[in-house]
Image (cartoon, rainbow, N blue to C red; front, side, top):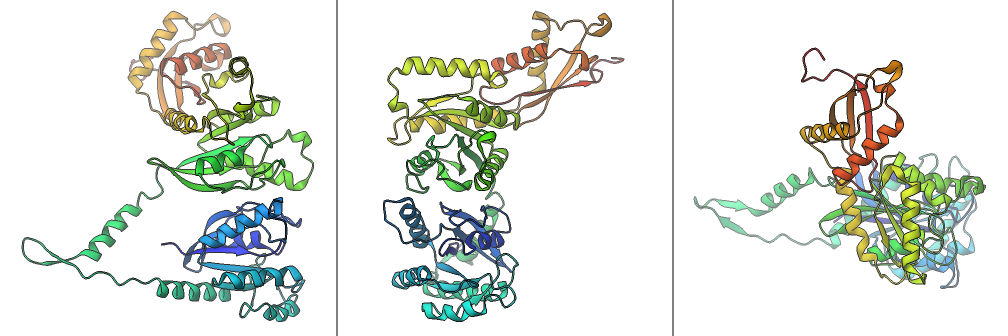
Length: 477
């Protein structure tokens, strides 16, 4: 069982900076503005050979349970319930505040192991705050600087001691079992299990589907993520722009392992003026670039606005598979007319990926959500499909015979001699021609549409590259 640590503290004490330091990547958004983190973020932490699961949490504030801050605190409580150790941060330069004292008492009442960290203690800046931290009653405070990487040796020792104490409390003596083989030689069952586990580790991270949920603000992305997971994993509410970080969550759907990524709402770039919103938008775009399948979530009451189409086009340009989900479908009166309008807009505006699957659902009520994942796995399979060279060249021959390429420059005939698939994810093909630069874009689109229709590849971008080379099967070209 992986040891789990939650980082907690009031806003703007450096929790996300410490999270990024321990996971070794800039996963969490960091800014001087307090309250940047709202959802809990999970990552694989490591410090000098110690590996653990790490939660970054929202800043603790004394707030009404129904408010946004109250919902954020429930997320922190859930992270603490799952954690084996809490790291409580205070700002060493600011000293102990009433809010620090309030939540230190809250942590003491939970009776879980806590390490108290006085952050921002580079040099002697936090000496006074470090001394004050003793008053919180959480044991000896450790002086660190998450931004500068100072104090990590003491942090390592504190985490190691907590790991050892946790292991001692949860130690279960192995059963003494001997099984005799045909030669009556005792078999070490523990060694067999250990060897079997080691063999499984080689493929532990293979086949993980990276699935990102993108869309405009307040389309219902976090509500959909919670509905898929079956728990209140993300903060939701009527306020637009609640999600800021792109949050990756490990999830198992049937036999498929999935990394589900909730993202911040993407507005038109001209409307993004605040630094924090720009950071959140950049984080969402990075999530899309690293995803394999993107679900574009629309508000069915105003589907496929310009920004929706911009997100869809960028997804396809990045070579990602696409599924369109129309949320809040329960609020639509004339559903046949709305679906017809949506499909017509997709066909005319996203010609580079005709046949994109459309799912109608209500993330709030759960109606129709069960249709989403089958479509996601379907386009995921199309996205990594490989077609034999023989089948491709039979298809190319039929296409060029039914509609020959036009003449190239200087009246020369364009010959498409040979075709092969060079990669998947997305499907990418090379066609060898005597005049590759002369082939019109319209004819290339004709080939792309025919390829998609003949080999049943809806919802995925197809890339066709033209190269000048003789047919390897015909001597002398």
